[in-house]
Amino acid sequence: MKIENENVASVESRCCLNRETMIKQLIVPVLWCIALCVQAQPALRLPSVIGNHAVLQQSSPVKLWGWAPGSWPVKISCSWNPTDTVVAQPGKDCSWSAVVNTPKAGGPYTITFISDKQRIVIDDILTGEVWLCSGQSNMEFNFTWSQGVLDAGDAVAQSANKSIRFFQVTRAYDHYPQANCQGEWKVCSPETVAGMSAVGYFFGKKLNETTGLPVGLIASYWGGSAVQTWIPQPVLERRPELVQLADKIQPVSWAPTASSLLYNGMIAPVAPYRMAGVIWYQGEANTDFPQDYGALFTSMITGWREAFRQELPFYYVQIAPCSCYSGLNGALLREQQETALALPQTGMITVGDLVDNIRDIHPKLKKEVGNRLANMVLKERYAKSDIQPYAPRFAAFKTEKNRAVVSVTSVGRLTCKTKTIANFQLAGDDRVFYPAVALLDRMGHIVLTAKEVKAPVAVRYCFTNDAMPGLFDVNGLPLVPFRTDKW
Image 1 (cartoon, one colour):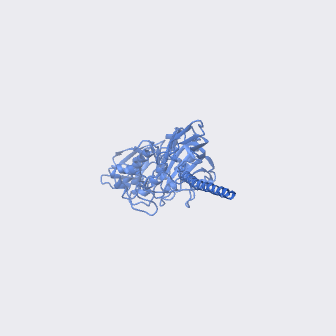
Image 2 (image 1 turned 90 degrees about the vertical axis):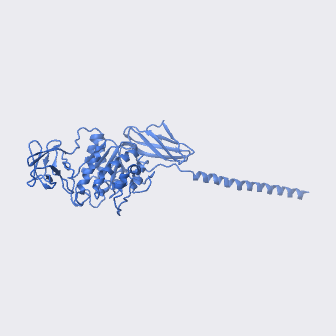
């Protein structure tokens, strides 16, 4: 009987063990499934342009965005207003966005993002002025290039400044607009500034020194790139005639040439980022078809403004003289660049005098280019009334028998830095241009004659590919190239 009881107990014990084993066998897979589900859920992520050391546009509604699981809201807390938590709900595609109001220039601040148990904190954030630096190689030209920046002096060694930050967009191209790009914010120092655009750095340095505001520079450029690669596709879809112009360019080995590719990869990812404006240096890659540039360039500007949802102030550099272009293509493209001035909130600087080698498409005087851009921006965007950034321009001309008399708008009277005034041309009804003898009269007018032209009807100044200006105003700014004909 005893043995029987023991057998019963043994059976019951084994049954209990089997039940426990079965329960464990059921629970463990369930726990593993839960763990895998937690691990598989989308991570809370931010675009690379929203990161440590960033500069946000001051005193503005600034968009913050990213990705997170759709199940939980994203809670955003900014240290400049810690009691106000902004909440964003991710959509079906896991993307979210929110708008925060930034304070006036200052910092450093932190911003905290929370999604359920996921948490991201970005720190050392400043509020200040954010500018986009874009274009091709003359904007890309940096302090590490073997040619060197001739007017840099000790700029790199003296560059340490926590109030200037850079974000360099890594080169990328795509057939569709991208939501993110590679890059990171860096604080200005001798180690970080060397690879930054020299024009962009001197522009930002001048803004920071003059206004005392933190400056963030987003650098997005590709050497040798044509303007059509930077135009948003929706702009081209609305205007088929632009597609025909854009398609003329031929493939090259150093940059993509298809329309919109660089916009998609290098501008679209930062388009939601609030900015103060754009500086642009490009055009050399479009000199094969200079007559098309004005339509393409103005369309690019309006397309960016649509994409950024801001009427971005846009300031650009007229390409420098160079003997490498065919025909009059360099002069014609410079003329086309001026057409963008018809758009509101645009400005152009001329740099024809800042050339060290007329055979080199990359002038090495970059500090003054950045300073001229900064001076125009300081005057027009930051109300620095004591700055005069406008180069002298053609105003009108009249003929007096065999003479043409040109008047200009300038600050003070023009002066010539050489023994004779060069690069003026005159033509008569036969439309043949001849070099003109130029003199400045007591009224500041330019009096032109050419022995071959008995009755002048048209005037040109520096209207060749490589002509460098010789007339300057009291601020040292050169007379902008011009022509009076449309031949």
